[in-house]
Length: 306
Ligand code: MLT
Ligand code: MN
Ligand code: ZN
Image 1 (cartoon, rainbow, N blue to C red):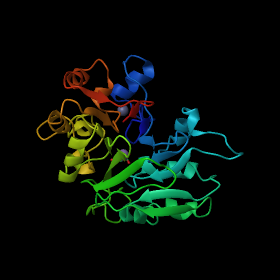
Image 2: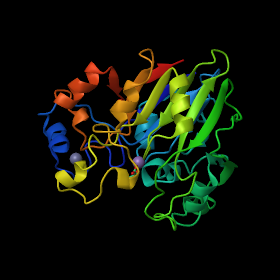
Image 3: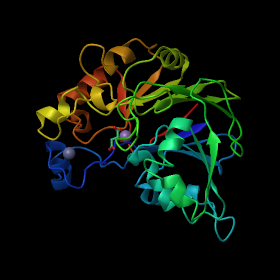
Image 4: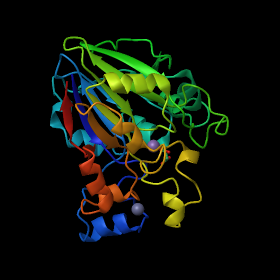
């Protein structure tokens, strides 16, 4: 099983179009040692190298597909290597790219929870709108940790685990989250029996997920914010990281403490990194701390195989 990072930034990307924080202006002017990053998405393939599951459809999907020519195998006048799509939530940065796929010659097969599906039919009716184009075939994904397979992508077993987080601001139940608003995904290769965990939005650690992380070869987890008050300190927002469903890395109970407890053999990678996060600056003290702890920062194009 292979996982490829298509976009490693959080919503807004890096740099973000209207942002002049230290990171965004530094990367724009070339004075900061940092890689540009597109918005949150990964792709996974199993036995067939021309059959991928797209996990999350980012607003940057067309650029991401163009950056990876093997996702266009050109076996027919209209073709794609994307066999199915899995959504970890219904947020803008993970779903807007569905509109860009509307020329599909068959309905898009979209695996998502009932909670995300309802938000994408009503609150932000992407699914309803797409019925006027290629159509959507929604496949139910229960956030209960039970294994399932995805047709057309052999060699992988999937699990979706409900994790603490929040639905999009447009959701009728924004302030009263339900299980399934956000999930973490566990992918197991049926030949090697090795697994990877992908959890780009994680408001707090959750027991079942923690179990899966300890069993995994590689974990890609919420790297949105370094501190809980990052956006407040920079004067960019009044919201704390935890309030919008993201566990910060530093501090007591933060992501670094959790990652510290994994076996040294586990590959640990932060993903869905917000443009304000100091870890994007390769010369920062925070980035040096990650290096000391053996933690990597995902970048667009990173590939992992288990
Ligand atoms: C999030 O991960 O909290 C959201 O994607 C934020 C956003 O809408 O940009
Ligand atoms: Mn997001
Ligand atoms: Zn910024």
